[in-house]
Length: 103
Image (cartoon, rainbow, N blue to C red; front, side):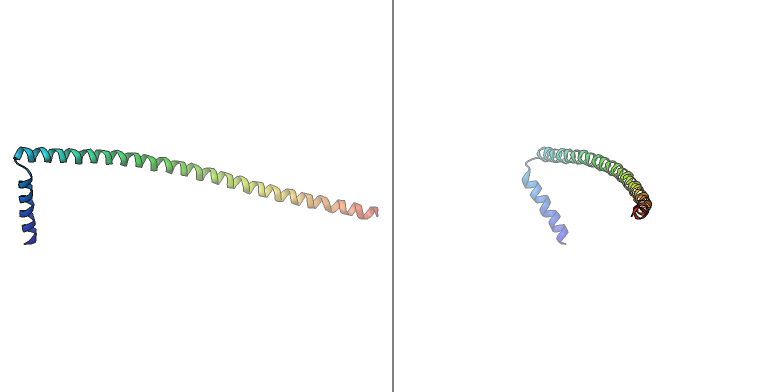
């Protein structure tokens, strides 16, 4: 019941707003044009945002790959450092033995 009443009131407001069918049709066409222009802008914005997201995603992938390469490099350097420490320790032992024998 309320819906039907609202529909009637809406029609009455529209008929009192416009003096002729042409005036009403012109207003409707103008509103449709505004809506269509808004939709076009939203589609353009959507396309730009999708491109931005795609670019950011590619950049993130590249950064992750670079990060993994750097992690591998750091791990290799750690291994090399441990090997050098072991060599130094192995070289110190004979040196210390020679120092003891000289005393």
